[in-house]
Amino acid sequence: MDFRYTAEEEAFHKEVKEFLDKELPPGFLGIDPGPEEESRPEIFEIAVKMWRKFGERNWIGITWPKEYGGQGGTIWKEMVLLQELAYRGSPGMDLAIAQGEIILHFGTEEQKKKFVLPITKGEVKWAIGMSEPNAGTDTFNVQLKAVEEADCFVLNGQKIWTSGAHNAKWCMVYARTDANKHLGLSVFIVDLKSPGITMRRITQATGIPAFCEVFFDNVRVPKENLLGKKNGGWEILLFAFGAERTYGLFTIYNGKRYLEHLIQYCKETKDADGVPLAKDPIIRNRLAQLAIEMEVGMNMGHELNWMASKGMPTVKASSQIKVHGGAWCQRLANAGQQILGLYGPLNEDSKWVRLGGRIRHTYISSLSFTLAGGTTETTKNHIAGRFGLGLPKQV
Ligand SMILES: Cc1cc2nc3c(=O)[nH]c(=O)nc-3n(C[C@H](O)[C@H](O)[C@H](O)COP(=O)(O)OP(=O)(O)OC[C@H]3O[C@@H](n4cnc5c(N)ncnc54)[C@H](O)[C@@H]3O)c2cc1C
Image (cartoon, helix red, strand yellow):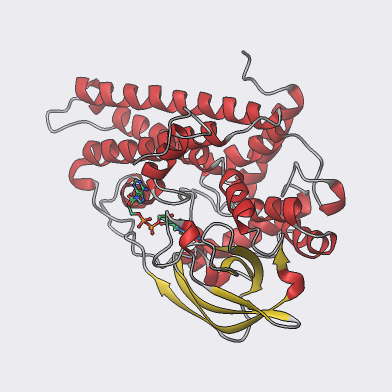
C-alpha cells in the first residue's frame, strides 16, 4: 500500500501550509479539536476570519457538488486540508461540514440552495441539538416536542451540551413528533434567534464556556424547515453519526503536534542532575510507545478514508478510530503532564509555563474526547454489534 499523496495533493498540501503560515498569528500554539474556539472571543475572531478565507478559496465542502458551492473533489483532497488544520490546531476546523452533508443527503432542493451555499462560503455557524438531560447516549429518548399546526411546528423542551449555540445562526434540532420511541423523531432546522429560544452557557472543566443549554418555549418553526420526512429522524440520526467519522482521526493529527513538541522539550531540557530528559529510559519508552500508537491511528485513518472513497460502509472503521484517537490523546496528555512535572499544572499566564500551557489544557479537554460524538462504551457497542463483529445485542 502506498499512502503518499499524489503530486497534485502534495501541491495542495503545500498551498494549505503556506496559507496557514500566513494567516495564523505568529507563534500561534493551536487549539484542540472541539468547542474550544467557541468560547474564547480572541480565538473565535480568528475562526470567523478563517471560515471566510476558506470560503473564498472554495475549500469548504471540497467533495460536494459544484452547484451547491463544492468542488466535486476527492475525499483525499479534503483530508489533506482537514488533517493539516487539525495538525496545526487551526481555528475554523468546525466548518459545519457534517451539517452540510446531512442537508445534501436529506434536504429538499430549496433547503440545499438556502442552507448549503452559505456554509461553503464560510458565512454561517451551525449547532447540533441532539442531547437532552435524559437523552445522551440514549438519543432516541429525546423529549423536546414538536406539534404540527397549519403552517408550522411548535417546539417546546430543552437541549443541553449544545456546542457553540451562542455563536450559531442555525441549529439542527432533533424533536419528538410521535410517541413511538424510534419512529417518532423528526429533525428541524431552527433559527436560533427565533422568539421563544433562550440559552444558558455551561462552563467546561477547562474553565471555558463552550456549551449551552437551549430552552424552547413555543418556538414556531416553518414547515419548510422540516428536514427529511416527519418521523424519519432515525435515518438522519444514523447518518449524522457517520458524518462525524473523522473526529477520532483529527484528535490524532492534533496530538501529533503535541507529541513533537514534547520530544523537542525532552531533547532541550535537563533534569536536576544535568542529564537530558531524552536520555531517561522511562521517558524514551513512553514517547516511543506514543509514537507507535499514533502511527496505528493514522493508518486506521488511511483505511477509513479509503473505504469512504470507495463508498463502503464506514461505521466500524470510524468507530474504531474514535475509540483509539480519544484514548490516545488522553495517554499523550497524561505522559506530557508527567514529563513536565511541576511545570505541568501551570497555565499560559504563568511566567514558568512550559509549551504554552497547551499540554495542561489538553490534559483536561481530552477527557471529553471519549464522550463527545458518542462515548467510548457506546462506540464499542457499535463495533461489537451488527455493523462490526456481528455480536447479538447485550443483555
Ligand atoms: C465536548 C463535547 C461536545 C458536545 N457537543 C454536543 C453538541 O454540540 N450537541 C449535542 O447534542 N450534544 C453534544 N455533546 C453531548 C454528547 O453527545 C453526550 O455527552 C454523549 O452523547 C453522552 O451522553 P451523556 O453525557 O448524557 O452521558 P450518558 O448517556 O448519561 O452516559 C453516562 C455514562 O454511561 C455510559 N453508558 C450509557 N449507556 C450505556 C450502555 N447502553 N452501555 C454501556 N455504557 C453506557 C456512557 O458510555 C457514559 O460513560 C457534547 C459532549 C461533549 C463532551
